[in-house]
Image (cartoon, rainbow, N blue to C red):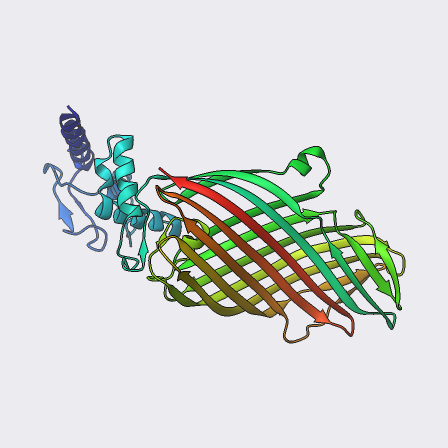
Length: 412
């Protein structure tokens, strides 16, 4: 029935095209300039039946109307064409063509067919060495996590020729999360009991995408819980919570050269299994952007520090497969700041914080993973960001943020 409908539709389109392309028999013989219509002369009593593209019909109609009015038609230099496809449409078309060739998506008839295609994509072995890496055979991975995180800000420098320094930290935040992943695509929900009780004024958002070749991690935090102490001209004073508000965005990205044998996901998302020990040199890109806004320090009055830094560098990562059950990961990705856009505003006066080489943004990761029998596993991961900016002649700022995760999961 479907094939018959397609044939009927095709014949209707063909008949429409033939009807529109036939010239009226009441037009006398007319000579048309050769640069307008190929052939030069055509007879009125000749029925022209010629299959032509739909976008040329408008041109033929314009010539016909000009002939009927007794006006010589203008030369048509080109025929209107379809609008050029955008970059995203071309990218989507190429992607669909690739999916069709690799996974035959035209044969999808049910959810089971979709799962089969996802399985082929998930288990595709052309991008990694099967002697070193493997994919889990199960569809789903469930995880239960406990997260502990914290951050700190340390400063030292001179203001009005008087030395000062400060050490501020947020209370450790404890959250629990439940996550479920299907063929490497996961989603998790976190709950902070202190936030629900109103005891915490810190909000944190984390996004990470780990792949063997490249990956990116984004962390955004807003907090009013920084507390500690500061000294001015040798006198130490307490800095209570609530006087400093921070909004800080950290972005860290990497590219692993030995991605066929070394896997970041094996340590952090468990979407791969590291069979043999392997390491890789990596390129790294780091970004730090944020605002520190406070007005509680009597000697400084109100102040506002605006930060924006971009770092480029590289490092090394290694997965050590101790035994069939144990694996340890360690990596360090230091980057040198190549773009610094820091400004300090005190008492309404805004000044740029001078750049002092070398300014660094360092990303460190450590993981320990234990594989039980029957597809159960447990792990501990630690990620830390450390930044150093400015100079002690005016303002030296170091910011650190860390996150510790304890994970228990199983595959099914």
